[in-house]
Image 1 (tube, rainbow, N blue to C red):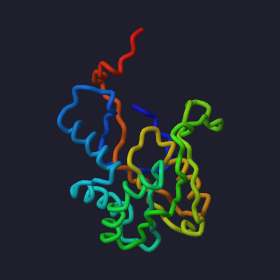
Image 2 (cartoon, rainbow, N blue to C red):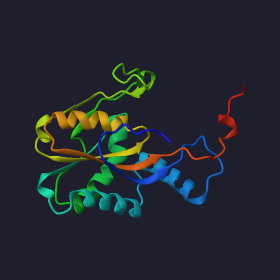
Image 3 (cartoon, one colour):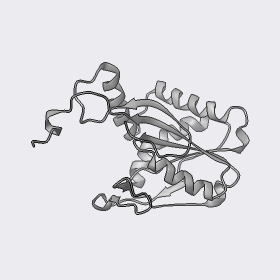
Image 4 (cartoon, rainbow, N blue to C red):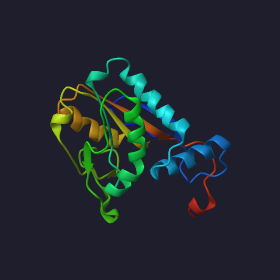
Length: 194
């Protein structure tokens, strides 16, 4: 299992098994399909309710200090596709602001979408975190960040630290799925010859 580096508390809705594993059970296959659908902006009513409940469990009754926003997808188009419907659903059901574009990501060139982070010596590569934010949005707020999948926690950590530096009281993640690595056989196409 991955070692999470988020440094911020988070809640996950589903456990996700990467596509390199074979022989999935029913719930494992369902969760994998749900993660793929989530990336396309298709979230079942049941999963929307689970996300809403997770957010409500964090905010409790003191909603005046809260702000919910989304960690950007790799392109603006994917971000809008992935989160627009979910953000509208959450805004209808929450008593605090839900901001689809509070964090504005830059479209990433897939050819250069990974880089070596010299500040974290024990892990080889991290995604590019090019984004801009209006720091005044986060000042004195308890920020809930929504993201699709957590594997190492680096994305949540990177955004969370910037938001804290902007004056946020706290940062909490609601992640649709946590990547797990079970003791299952890998697909034959994923096994390398020695």
